[in-house]
Image (cartoon, rainbow, N blue to C red; front, side, top):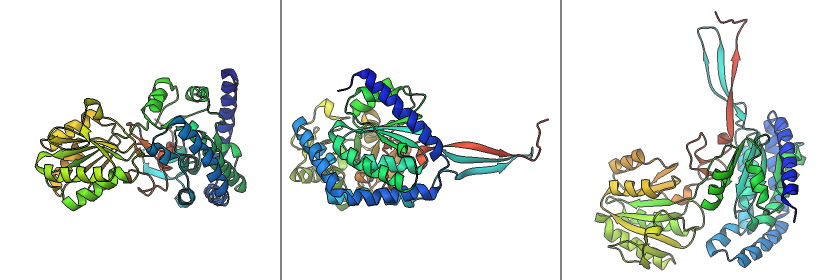
Length: 417
C-alpha cells in the first residue's frame, strides 16, 4: 500500500492532467463527445463478460464485508443491468449538447447586446459508494457537459468500476478526445478522498453520492464547493382522500422495487381517517417481506422507536405512523426529511397543492412511486446524483446541471459616458 505522501502526489498528478483535459474539452465538438459515448457503449457491451467477472470479485468482497441484501443488490451487475448502462450512455450521447447554449439574451439602451451562455464547470470530482453504474453515468454526464472528471468509486465496486472505466477511456480514444478527460482513482485508500477534497487548484466542484457518513465527511473536509447528495430519507403520505388501488400499488412499488436505492420510501405517514387503508398497505408490505416498524394505532412487525424516524434504512425495513392531518404530515417531514423526495397520495387537488407549497424537498410527487426519483426517469438520460442542497444543481443532476454560464457582451465601438 502506498503511503499518504505517495497518494497525495498521485492525486495531484491526476488533478493536473484533468485540468489540462478540461481545457481541451471546453471547446470539443458536440459530435466528438457523442461519438465517444456511443463508442464507450459499444465497448461496454463487447466487454460485458469481463465486467461481470470483475463484478463477481466485488460481490465476493461485499459478502466478506457483510453487506446487506439490499446493498448487494446495488452492487450487482448482470447482463440486463449492463444493457441499461449501455442505454444510458447512448441516451446521454443523443441529448442536446448544453455547452454554448444561449440561456438568455437582451439589448441595452447603451447599445450592448448581452448573452448568457452555458459553459463547463471545468473539473468535477465524483465520490460514490457501491453502485458501479455511477462510473458510467458520471463519466458520461461530465463529458457531455464539457467537464473533465475524477471518479473515486467505493471500495466495494473497485473492480467493476475499473472495468467500466476502461470502456469509457476506449470511447474517448475512438473520438480523439484526451484519455485524461475521465480518470478513475486507482486505489481504495481513503487518503485519496482527503486529497481530492482539498485540490482547489485542480477541482471546481465535488459531487458526493452515498450515505450519510460519506456526505458528512465531504461536507466537513471539502475546501472545494460541494453539490451535496444527502441520504434519501423519503416519505410517502397517505391522505384521507387517497385512492385505495393507487395507494397500494404506489406504496408497494416505492418500497419493494429496489429497497437499497436512494429513492426507496423509508417512512409511511397515514392520515387517521385513512387508517384502515394504511393498515391494509402495511399488511401487504409485511407479506412482501418488509419489516414494518409502526407507531401507536397500527399493527406491524415491531413497535417503532424514536430513531426510526428520519432514518435511511436502505433495506427491507420501513417505518409507519398515523398523523392527525396533512399539516401534521408536513410537520413530520420538515423535521425528519433529508429534502430528497416526498410523495402524497390523494385525489384532493387542494391537499396536493398544500403539500407541494409547504415542503421544499428537491422532488415532490403526487400519486407516483418515489422510485421515479431518478435522472433517467426524468428524461435526463442519466444522473450523477440527486442534489439535496440549495445550489443551482438541485434534484437529479444531469448534463445541464453540470454547467455554469458566462456573459458574452457585444458592442459596436460602444463606450460608457
